[in-house]
Length: 409
Picture (cartoon, rainbow, N blue to C red):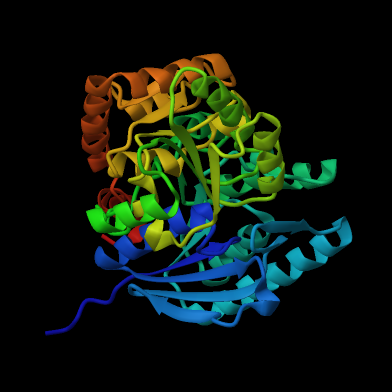
């Protein structure tokens, strides 16, 4: 019996697999596509390439290689942004590396994860060289959500964000907001596929009660009500300062309450200082970044998690991973009706919605959750049920159908 040849999909990424998109979107999509009968390889950029040793490995059936430095330098909780000259030279080296190594892969189709110049140009050259299908994934409003040091940088990002999807055979996007934006930019509606973010149910399994109890003890949380935040500490995209100010008001109404902030980023020190200034030093716990396979335990410490959000273009174009991860762990979410969030929550809602950018209504919703055990239980049940639709195993099947429509039925 002749074994069927598996189509080889090559992902070109501008971040590593520990970044939010790499860890929460691209790797789980790749992993489950392998289980759906694809051969998947990832060529990626690393935030500390010169000092990173394990540049090639196979993880759960996915072949991964880091080929160059990404457009920022990250180490620990610190982020260093390059000068314009250094940024251009780093980007050119990355683009060449992605293309050069991509040629060696002999792929059947190219998947560009985020329409950036480095992977975008490499993807275009590879598809034209071999006449291959091109898939472009737009999982953020890139020109609005990325930090840029000069106007020309934002213009370059916006150009590629609008140009690459027009050249693609298939465009995936994780919000209806971005879908509508792409159509307005002239992308053919028929080739756009809605592919929201989701959760890897294998990574976010229910942890053992002993592990949860041990971590609770280590963090001195016994007897405390816990509000959780899980994600980046970058105020340009995530207004965690809004959450801390809201938490200050919560402490005036609820005793023995703790805000647990899990994650790292360039504004970690600033947020610690803000907590101290508000008299919350002993009530806000910053864990820093934690190991991905331990995140499920940290989620289970919280009674409610919060997705603080302003109503900006970047926020409308974002599909927060923390919402799906919270739901999978049965933790109710407080967020706002911005972008797709209300749609994602469903009806009856699996989330409590505050007014965007407003610490007062955020405070009210947090207090509502913590003051009503029946509401908290119902929200938890809805969250678990809602998460079933956003498993990456389910989403990968949807992606497979669309990819097969290109040429691999």
